[in-house]
Length: 322
Image (cartoon, rainbow, N blue to C red; front, top):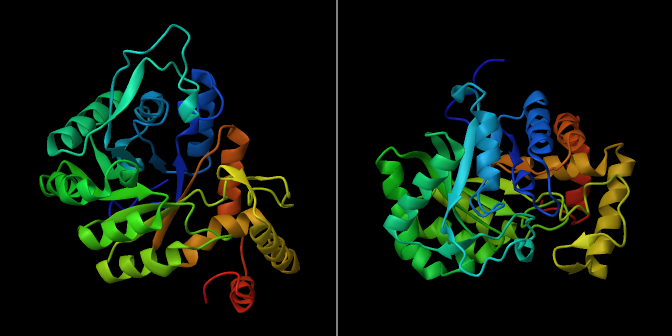
């Protein structure tokens, strides 16, 4: 396989929260098998963060990627939370309050200062064992202080890029207002839009996508399966939706989308994975997975041929933006 174009972002990426023991614990061997399945499926774009498993995701992903030629993959991580000793840690305590099954011997400390951003990058490099970071995101700035992010953290990222410390900079967020404000308030290369531009819901289409077009900022779409609602060919009414039950309005919308997919002979998960890429500003889709078979399946879904008539019908029915 030839090396990727360094100017391009591989269109299908693996979000490595699961190998940080998100939702369920994985052994080192199980995590390695997941990453190996991603690589063997042709995935060359990997995203991680200190937040994922209190550094476990970065350590496991870095150990795996160190066995691969550096020019053959695209790597992103995040800043904004420093990992520091947890004075309240007790033997056997776990970070399950944040959905990670790892010891809570560390805690997350917000730091949007220039020094904090640079320290976070240096510590991520150490955990990864990899010096070159292709893309550095500010992680969830609205959960701490969006105004401070605009005033201090994003300029710090711009300086890192200007100094040649990272290739690209951006933010990752689930909140459309934070994304659009950051795109308009800083010179960002890419933003990770998590769950706000999916086949089921597209709130980011109102403001984030136009802002990105105006500013020449690209998008990496994440959480495209809407908490798993779009991951099965037959949608389930009792499926999880973010932090609660699926509203009736969205269930009705999902049923209509599924019917269009069936009429066109397209698996619902394939349509869900490929939908964001129909936009001119979306450069890549990042999906997770905690089992090797899931990674192979995601690569297959990304390769499914989808007729233009599917998108045309969904748009005509008001289910996706025209």
